[in-house]
Amino acid sequence: MTVSEFCDCVIVGDGIDALVCAAYLSRGGCKTVLVTQRVEEDRAAAAADSGGPAPFGAGSLFRYGPAIRELNLRGHGFAYRARPAVRVSLHPDGDHVVVTGNADEVRRELHRFSPADADAYTRYFRAMRRLGWLVRRSPQGASEAGVADRAAELRAVLRQAARLPDRELITAAAVLCTGARSLLDSWFASDRLKAFLAGEALSGAGVGPSTQGSAGLLLDHALHAPVGEAAPWLRAVDGWAGAHKAVEAAALACGVTVHRTAQAQQITRGKGGRCTVALSDGGTIEAAAVVHTLDPRSLLHLLDDGVLPDGYRSVLMDGDFAMPFAEARFRLRRLPRLRSRAGAVSARSTDAQFSVGPTLDYLDSAHSQACRGSLPLHPYIECRITAADVTAGPAGGGGAAGEEGAVLHARVQCATRGQGAASWRTVGPCVTQRALAALEPHWEGLSSLVEESWALSPEALEREALLRGEAVGRGGTLPSVDPLLRAPALFGGHRTPLQNLYVYGASGTGTATPFGATGRTVARLVLDDLEARGGAGAGVHPAGGGRHA
Image 1: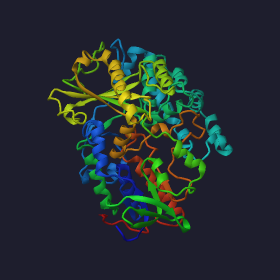
Image 2: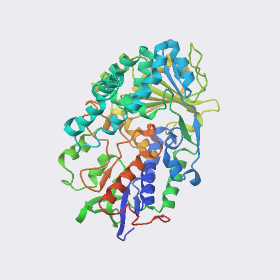
Image 3: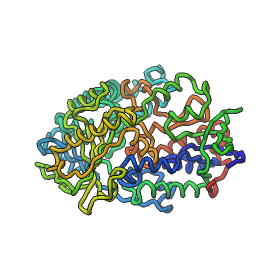
Image 4: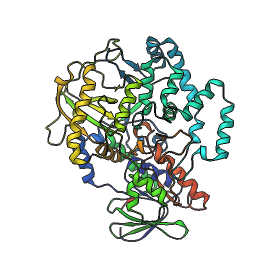
């Protein structure tokens, strides 16, 4: 494109959420242009890092979101199937905690460890759900003060809290001011159950159960999970590649124009806050709003120095947006047999997600070691097993394993970040060794089944997530140190200090977020802002058929 173009909104990015955002904007009356920032070399590099086409295969798990129905994605070829919801917290004695998608089964399972906890489990989730208003009053961006710094907002929170029943008032106080350990201790007796809930809620956040403010993450987890059950998962039949293709088709049907021949090189602002996006082929696009959907740090390269306020710029420059975990992958000759005293877990199940984090002390120790800059000796791990033909192996590592083979994916939490390629050649083998050491006690003869192993750095996992269309960097957006009412160190909102410029590359939670939810939320925000300013969003540009350019 070499001729200037005018539109209501430009989306910079090429992920599923970027396409969803573009589709909703076009449906809402905005003339929308999406400028992709991905090249085929990026996809090839991610495939080499992961050991195969994993970004569009084994990892294609998601939660149902309204975008699937509202954008008629199934009509555009998006196919998915349910995956049984089974969470297994592994313990050395084989008496694992198994949480399924059936509330009655969960109650019977928890009764084995503590009859009182079995009764309290559902009450806990319902009580946390009733406290959802606390999240809605949490800070929305780095440029906004926390509730505790705004007297009127703080009074409103305290007035509403004062009307709560005694037990819920105590829970609300714990959510706002304490760590996850304190809150869980007030509800449950079983150490196994407390460790399971803490691991589920804090996974990927880079915090420990004793970290001040981490109780707020328990609230966030409770709001996204069915009451008293394991949240269900769905798997894209054709992987993320098929999902991306369907969402792009839906965006085009809504009237979105997709440019793939040039990349955004600069964003400038003119009169009335309108933005001009300069492209690598010499073309320009002028728009009322720009939504940047990639790593927030890359936004700095598109803006002139001094455009963003110094404080906000520092947030982006100093923020740690890398994934707070690494992943070890093991190609196995056959599916391993799980050691299980209770016999509640299928020995050949590939539908369960397993975790190694048996106690709160274990989780705190792993976090403490990571804070000192070292890979935890006993890390918290989440793992799953996939069919071997989904992930072929590392680059140059040969073909897929036989029919009975499998690949074990082990996410090692609190991994050291920013190692660089040279250092990762040393750290990577340590990740696989410690993951194998942590998993070996739970599967019979696991080491003898390993044919090949490799590790993905946090940066490689971030690249995978971006190519799948996920937002990155939970660790960069959560209130990991301050209580919930204080503004987090970074940001979780989408507006920037510059009117009509939005960013959301670091405000999602990956597969924990319903499919397309971030793009849908940002589109609604942009439409509301433009309508309030008397621009698009009120049907100025009726959506028609889109096109590639």
